[in-house]
Image (cartoon, rainbow, N blue to C red):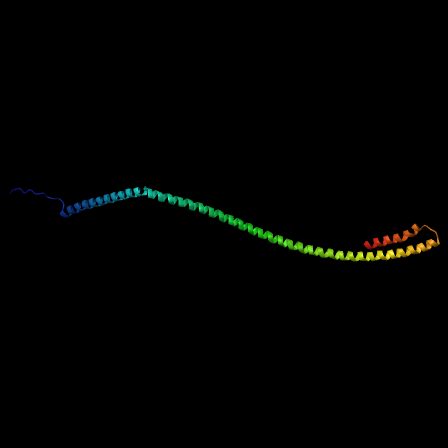
Length: 182
């Protein structure tokens, strides 16, 4: 018999198909991965081009400018609020001071009224004393006049020094006035 030449596969057919399938699967996954990477690269390049475009740069500048303006406005607002709080505190202090001064003024007015009443009472008392003293002076003048008239009558009868006779009534008058005023 003639020898038959055929290849003898040492592996079963299922394993061959399985090995080929794993290689194909790996190849497909590799190709898909490469496509995804290329696609992502293209998209990244497109994004970089768009991001570096003039419109995008203008937008970024506008955003930064808005942030700066917002920051400055926030600082001004905070400063205004601090100023408002300070002014409010000063207003409270001023109101307290005004209230204290008004209370002090009312107390001073009351004390002044009391002092005026006391002084009016003293003035009334002094006016009464003055009237009494004036009446007493008037009475003493009349008495002095009467005494002078009597002395004059007695002098014409006896020639004595009239100046010595006039001194005692004047002395009495001065002592009476000083006693009233004390």
